Structures are given as structure tokens and as C-alpha cells.
Length: 227
Length: 388
Image (tube, rainbow over all chains, first blue to last red):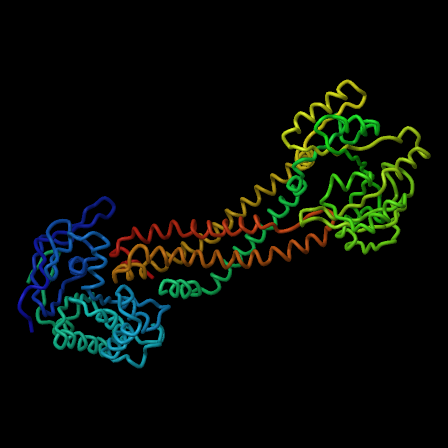
């Protein structure tokens, strides 16, 4: 359930891209508030701007106008390296295609974000094992991505996203590449992270069943919020 | 530590591609090292020239002799400390078609020659034996090893510049002061040559090929050269006196086209190393665009991305360099064995090794430059959209 206070504030944000000298508006004057502990689903047809909005919230892209404030930090004011450090500390990413490094084991993939922290080797190991146990892959730590199923890979990706205990989790179509059973498991896991660990989650999805797990769903169409 | 681990893991991701690139770099480094060794060997005479030695030869050409009578006159020129002389003998030993049988045979004055060339070291007892016998000769250690010459052996030579059959008895084996000293020569008494000329070809006696002068101070060389050449300016045997370095350089410059070609080829090889490596690194970086975007998303900085790309490039370049250099030595040894007297000194010099390492490291850095810049400048959202 939503907690008190606003975790994410998107304030009159616009964003457009240039393709072959043509400017394509993607987001038009978007404003949303996401309370702390919220599980928000962003829905809409392809090209509606939901992933762009997610990228702005996660600090991997910048708005043309307006501002994005996360946990009190106006992230547009941060320089590139400050923003990178901010992302490392505050944001956990879950991608549609998992985006694990194929040459690293599950353990090493989950350990990646911790390499930027000052934790000792022992502490890192404890954190990684805890994250992998939480997603139910404690027995697969030495497996490489190609030795795992799609659902397991996504669970490793979730472990990587939560291992630093980030302030918010952003998920871009986390079930988009999974079968129904695996998708259900992933959504249960995200639901658990929200309910048990009070994580604020913003998720982009096409899947109405996935969106059902969210507290709230917002719809975008042609760069505008419709609901 | 993580970067190193990921660099190594990335490097062996496409084992065949990495292997072929390393082989390519190794062959290029080996070729570069070998070419540079040839260039160095070609000019080894220049490099090993003494700082205080000068050569006086006939002004028109080296092939024309000078009168023996110049000896005392040159000795009296102020600044000259010692004078020796020698003749190029030539001749044919065994089968002339075999390169191995070509080695310098030089008539010298035993009393002075080894004093002006202290880098040729002859054991005292052998030198004493050599001096006693008219047709005795001294051979270099490398030459003796190559032909199996031992003390007491007879070396028959068919004369060409000085016709007739000549027989020399090996009475000594000299060694060089260091690796740069030529150990492929044969020295014998100038008197022996002169006496036979006196008997067999009157008119060719009393001639020497060139004079070797030593001076106290290298700064005196221009003055001494002028004094010697002025002394014989209007004579039948006008002279040209120059430093030993200039003298050697004049031989090297006769083959300057070959040396320049070799140098150009060695630079082309640098380009080949760069292209081979750059091709692999650009390909690898392009394949990993999404991974770099993910790493940047997770908070990894430009420094990390550069480290990954440059690290892989340097790993391949340095591995290829080590293997290439490792192959250069046996190749140089093989070449030196196949053509033992072609280059009197044929060693892979330290400077060649350093150059090869610099070239490989430069190629490693240069090959990573473009893909690393592109990866650093890439927007995360563009990288995440890229297709695997």
C-alpha cells in the first residue's frame, strides 16, 4: 500500500527525438506524482512514450523541459558523473531482455552494482547471496546466463536490481519476453518486493495481467496521459 | 580487478577471432622485429665505428690503391697518433656460389693493425705464432665456428684480384670485444701479399688499399683529414680522408634503396598490426554496445568503459607482441645460420625489442581509441535500443 510522501515527481515534462531532421514529440507536458511505496504500471500502445517516461524517471535520459524529482533530488541538475553515481545508489533496473552480461555468472552479474560501492569482499558476497536467495536462485549462483531459462535470467536481473537496496525499482516490460508461468512468477516477485520490502516500483507493461499486480495503472497515448 | 577479469573473459569470448588476431599481431611484430634487425645489421659497421679512427683512401675510388710510401708521411701529420694499413684481398674459397664461403679476407700489418683495432682480441700465444709465419692467418671466432677452422688448418684461396693459388695457415682465432664486433673476417700478412706481387706481378708491389689513422682527440679529425688530403692534393694518388663512421656510412648508402625499402615495409607492418587489431576491437565493441549501455545504466563511468575496451585491445596486442618477439629470436638465429657471413653482426638489438613493444602498445591504444570514444559518447537509451 502507498506510504506517505512523494517519491517521484514528474513535473510538466516534455521530450522529443530527432529522426532525420524531423522532430518527433514523445512526451507532451506530463506531470505525475508517485508516492513512496507505490507500485505503478505505465501502460499504452507502442510509441506512446511510456519507456521514455521510465528512462527519465530512472535518470538515463533527460527531459527537454520540465523536471524530474526523485526522493527530493532534482535529477536534471546533476552532471553526468553525479547522475551515474545517483543511479548506482538509488535506482534498480529490470529490462525486458534481462541484459545480463553473458560472460559473467549469476553471482558476478548480481555483484556488478556492488563493485561501485565501498563494501568489503565478504559483505558483497553476503549481499549477492541474499539477493539471489530472495529471488529463489541461491543454488544457481555459478551458472552462466545461457545455462538459465528466461524466467531464471529475469530473476537474476531482479537480484541485480535489488542488491544495492535502491530507492526505486524501474522495470521495462519485465514479463515481455516470458511465458505465462514465468511471467506470473516474476510479477509475484515484484509484488513481494513492493509489499515486503516497501520498494517503490514503476513498471512499463503491455500485459494487463501484469498490470493487475500494480496499485495503480496510468495510460499514455501519443505522449499524453489519458488516465 | 573486476575490469581485468571482464577484459580477460571478453577477450576469450570469440576464441577463434581472438586467436587469429593474436596470430596476426604476432606475425606482424615478428616481421617488424626481423626487418628492423636487418636494417640494424646493415648499419652495424657504422654503429660500431670508433670515435677516434679515420680512413684514408684513394680519392677517386676505394678500389684504387695508395702507395705504401704514404705511411711515414701520414704518421708525421700533427694529431695522428698511429697509422696502420690494409688491402682487400678478395679471392674465392671453395664454391663461390655458396654465400657461406664469402667472407672478408684482408691483408694487414700485424705490427699496427690490432693496435688501431683493439676490439679484435687475439690470445697472446696465438698472436705470437701468427707473427712468426709469413702465410699465417687469423680468423674470427664466428667464421671458425661456421667453417670448422682449427689452429693449423690450411685455407686454400683462389685469387681473383691477386691471381694465383694462395694458402693460409690458421694460427690464431680472434674474438670480438662485444657483440657488435665482426667475427667473420680473415686477416693475413700484408708482407706475404706484397712479396708475391713483387715476384709475380711487378708493378703491383708497394701498394696498400687504405690507411687507418687514429687521433688523440675526435675534435682534431677535420683538421687531420684536411692536412692529409692537402698533402696529396696534386699528386697521382690524391686521397680522401674521413672518419671511420663516414667511411662505413658510404658503404651503407650504396644500399640505401634497399634499407629505405625495408624501413618503409616495417612502417607498413605497423599499419597492418593496427588494422588487424582495430578490426577486431571495433567489431567486439559494436557487439557489446548494449552491455556498455547496461554498465553505464548501473552507474559505471566512462573510465570503466574505456578500461574494458582499451584493456581488451592491449591484452591482444601485448600477447601478440610477446609471441611475435619470441618468434623473432629463433627467426634471426635461423637467418644468421643460413647466411652466416652476409651480415657479420646479426643480433636482435634491445632497441628493436623496445621499438616492437612500443609499436604493439601504440597499436593497442590506437585500435581502442575510436570504439572507446564511441562507447563513451553513446547515449544510454540508444545503447539499450541496439540489437545484439
